[in-house]
Image 1 (cartoon, rainbow over the protein chains, first blue to last red):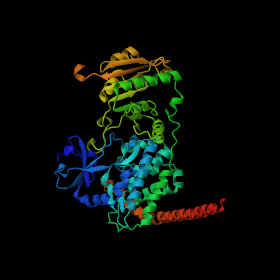
Image 2: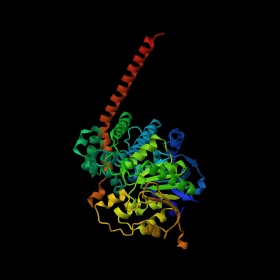
Image 3: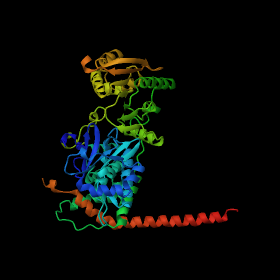
Image 4: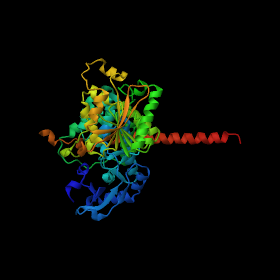
Length: 463
Length: 54
């Protein structure tokens, strides 16, 4: 098989790999994983996990799709439409991913199996739920063995959740640097002293880190491990209580209370909703990205007309609120994610290829950039032409709100700085965006100074 | 380059063995407590049923 068809996110695992053929996604199961794969399928574990929505379902595919001698079989997993990464999740998404992993481990144990790894990258959010996507992570449990995924679980889930909950929510970004999770010695140093009073954090982070340091250099082959079943279950149970105890309340960040603190009258808000709905109905996007979505108020309009929406925002509190909203309302079409648009997720890992950059993922049919332009152009000094170029790169359709200088929110932005933005006005905005887009509709928002535009990208040959 | 040969994974395995007795004990206590609670809740719910006017 050409190496170029193999997805680089899965090349570390000797049990098999993901590959693309004729635009479809397949997973090769290698001969060395045959017994574990058969145990997963025949023990009833696969069925129960799929039934509970915890594991991505798959179909058996034609084995001749693989020409490799190592292949045992080929399966076709259900495709997750948008791949997201732990450094883009809010606190509750990471927590739900952790609890999902432990639930899977508990059910696997009841079926005589165990997870061999507990990477946060094995979880994806699909239809509003944390779903495990690595079918090859299960192995048969042998009495007396330790949990092979213990270290990874602590690094990928427990340590970042503890840091976010107790120290600072922004420490989640450590996951963007440390792709195999936050090193426990680092987490132990960064956690406040009071964390030593929590029995589970003391044990699974502080003492665990010390033990890693103490035995790290020991080259001796370890004696046969023996951890009885009760202790094994106890470890998982203890980790579960540790994760459940960690909480974070979405307050105190910049945008968490934005909708209680805007300059919209009721009439203006209604007008804005109606215009956005009209534009979306014209475009009928299958996938919409709402950039600067806040808690996802306008994403809901797109979801209501049947679009899948990724609701990006820079503020962890807004994303947290958006996610909790989708959970309580069982909203399956909106995926809220944390993203700094001025520094979007890059390609990471070996050969820059293990984790995709934002633009390497499936791009949308429409982008909404509502009440965003002034943050990009004024707070971040981005020229309008550059903003237009980037948005044109993202999607065919653009719904964008222009917020002029006499708007009270823009006045607030300019209050403490010199106005060095002579081109920030409606006519220059239209001129610069017309380089990349054709303006389809332009509607002022009632009772405000703002205007909403529906634009369509001009194809590069017509420019 | 000495750090390149250090593997925190070894310490994680040994650490699991060190805490096994403790987490196992805690879990046994928890299971015991669940049984005690279940026992009393069945006793009381039976009594309530018996006391209920027929």
